[in-house]
Length: 243
Image 1 (tube, rainbow, N blue to C red):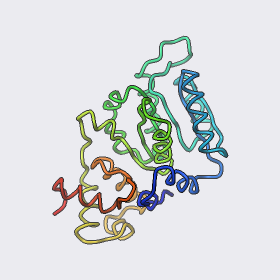
Image 2 (cartoon, one colour):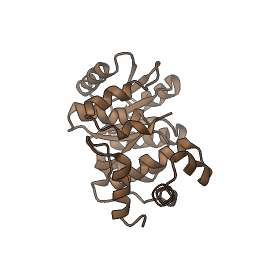
Image 3 (cartoon, rainbow, N blue to C red):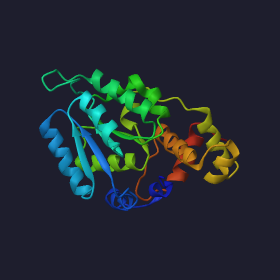
């Protein structure tokens, strides 16, 4: 289970990567999906340096992706949207990636996902499914530096959400009533997460999931020298979500 304390450390991203790696499963499996060998090799090189003990799987088409997930049950899929459907002779299209992504979220609701793409705006089509996905979900524009890519991969492995790039397009995700309830119980009644879970009759894991969605929608992310819970409260009050 993901530990929310990982996001409250007042340390650099590099240190957070090392801390987060301590909580990863010993049999960590990561599936990397991309039809361009140069991009695939570069991504794998960065990942292998960060996760030397992990098992890495690859797929280049939508069909290969489906087969690998069903057969190998990876902990994380790092996924390019623009891929061919059946074979590399076909033209890669974002619509094939979107369809596979829909299927992954529907069939594997707790699967951790990192979408690494130049087609970020395409994800607007499935923002409601992203909103309710129970696993980690992060977005990496391919123009980002490798260090930032690794930070977002690690966030996904911890079950966190980071969709700032999608929301920057001007279409913010809907703030769900259950998230508002969590904010009120935490900041107006002063309840801790376990007490919140008991009050609203959900599991503590679900409350942690709500927090990562709340922070993503409010644009609150881990920053050196800042307390994540306090920053969340400040933003929630600024938006009028709590008194």
